[in-house]
Length: 242
Ligand SMILES: C[S@@+](CC[C@H](N)C(=O)[O-])C[C@H]1O[C@@H](n2cnc3c(N)ncnc32)[C@H](O)[C@@H]1O
Image (cartoon, rainbow, N blue to C red; front, side, top):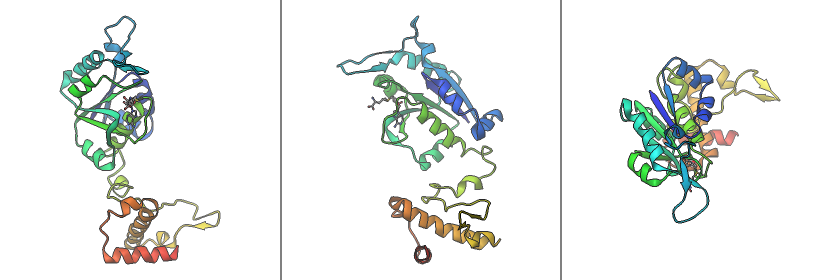
């Protein structure tokens, strides 16, 4: 899978995605990330790519032409699916992450300052995505968020599919609490069932605790679940124990 990032500060994104799991996936060429600096397409001796707003208002806006020239360069090896990261977009969720993981080539356009002249985004963007209802200074953190979350869905990036299939948000629930050694820490014991080696019991326990976790921490998600009578009984029994 290939990501092309169009940004005024591509170094920020590269630095973040150089290490750990995504860094190794890049080394193995499971994912490729190439970077395009909008300033390289400025056509101005000083590398200027922004200007003041028509109609007044503070701040500077990135101009159409450098972004468009950069986009044309990205397209020279085929047209990618183009995402503009923006606070006006639909908020990213795991369903969208999974959908994006099915694409071969995604270009992510990052704004900065006041954003980008709407005429060029209207012309080249397939989808506008936000990472939450707040405003960042630039799209670089949003690009990192998309690349990281989508990459871990690509075969070979994580050790195996089990590493993410039971994770939070994969099936509308949150993951059950997890524990590692030591068995007792600050008088807090790991639940006995996780130590008994009976995988069917462990799976059943984890499923119930995942529902309890969702009920406690994300009632909005819990309300959307279609629980069986048996699920309800197990959840309520656990709640009575806690
Ligand atoms: C300061 S913001 C511009 C905000 C814009 N003037 C507005 O009010 O909608 C600069 C850039 O940061 C990025 N950005 C800011 N908040 C974001 C968010 N919540 N999700 C994704 N990108 C965001 C976008 O690329 C945006 O063009």
